[in-house]
Length: 81
Image (tube, rainbow, N blue to C red; front, top):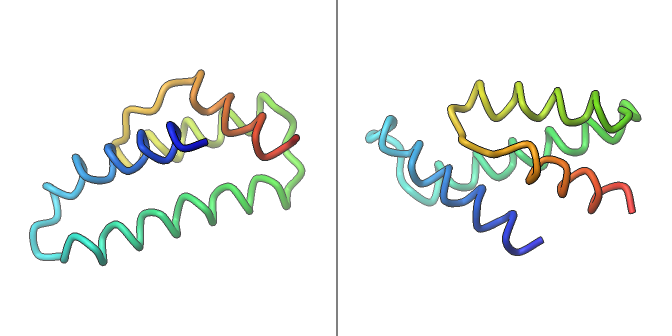
């Protein structure tokens, strides 16, 4: 999972440029908490694989993150194994 965290942190860092008034560490903390909350929500709702992937695609798209479907699939596999 380290590669997934690295990819998400990279996307957060790129997105941070849109919010110059927020400190780097605060922004990173908020975004990582939001990612974990999205994962917990998806697990709590017991989404099947396709729904999980679709929900994360919407989530990352809303955030403006460029996370591909293979990475989301990997997140699903890690969470559900």
